[in-house]
Amino acid sequence: MKNLPRVLVVEDEPAIAELVSVNLRHNGFQPVWAEDGVAAQRELDAVLPDVILLDWMLPGQSGLALARKWRGDARTRGVPILMLTARGDEPDKVAGLDAGADDYITKPFSTQELLARIRAVLRRRAPEQASDSVTVGELALDPATHRVTWRGAALKIGPTEFKLLHYLMRHPERVHSRSQLLDKVWGDHVFIEERTVDVHVKRLREALGGAGAMIETVRGAGYRLAAPAFAVGAAS
Ligand code: CA
Image (tube, rainbow, N blue to C red; front, side):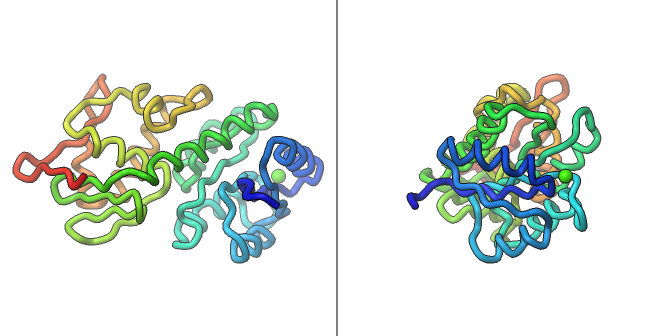
């Protein structure tokens, strides 16, 4: 088989899993079905997928718990997670993003919407891989190794936060509105709410620890990465 993007579908309802798998296969993806967290973990241990499609309601460990676990695991940390949630469960969506999901999609969803979301999370990772490393103050980011360091110490950072930080670091001191960030970082933002930006900024600040304060909220305007005046420099 050619090098088709591999999608791990974690879904306990066979009818939905089958429908999703058929659609993925017809659109150039390679779906792998796991009916629960145990089966999914077995798949992840064997081959890392390009993206995980994760149902919220699962027997055994919930999708939320799994997202948190995989985000905390060095092996699976970089794999984007697209969460499937029930209709109208707004707190669930935010909780899912907090747990480490990159995006969510509400059931029932159309095939086109699902494919667009999967392509969007895959695209988000692609452009950052070829570019140069960048340094702002004592914060350094290397897209080639996907590594972020603060005062020389490596930081754990999720794929969407990495992309967001990369963008902010390439444009320090400038204020970016939420819709600008969606446009530049998420790219295909037609399905994503502006509040999603806030969730990822919060996670980014937490991941940055001591450097988190560099990301400033500009009331009524958006966000800015403040470069310490004494040490601005770009390694690129
Ligand atoms: Ca389910």
